[in-house]
Length: 113
Length: 115
Image 1: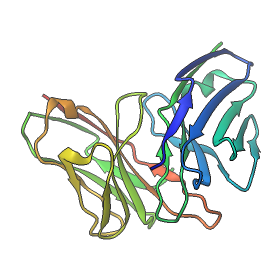
Image 2: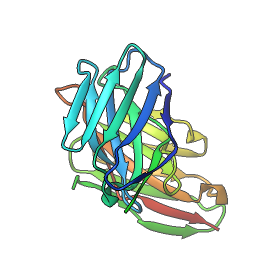
Image 3: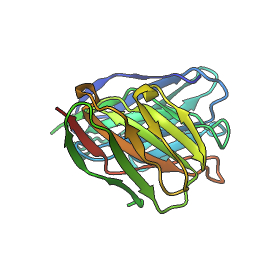
């Protein structure tokens, strides 16, 4: 089955700097890659996703890149703000409509004012 | 905010008790999930359902059961609660989208403490 690894497990950046979180997956048939953000005490929420027919997707300060050949994808946050502090989870799946995504172990991001 | 509900929100119970955690969604989603998560830590899949009368076990399923008799309802039962079950339990639902997306919407969680 699918296995998703995520690095780093913790990340601290200064406000205004960029943050990058990287994930790798094992199943080459996976073609859907979402990212979720979980703020302290709250539920995870989708922030961006990408399909395998797209190499990059942007939404304001957030971007995701996908390299299907290498089976890795990354989340980039530019101009970080304190409210970006949270745990971020990547996931992979979407082979069929019955498939479930598999989550990575998460990255705890701290943005230092 | 997505319409997915969990009850109770908090539960303190003694060892050996049987408990059922409730999860309901009003979005008509075919897929539903149960996760166990300690604060800020990994999401561990307990059970998964891709439709009525279909359930699959996840990594942590051995001590719990689920049922999916109605699309909107996906209860989780612990037959005999143990202190190791102390954690937060998150329910989620999703629908396979036309663009091949599969966004999961999470409930607010049930925080379980087993004494």
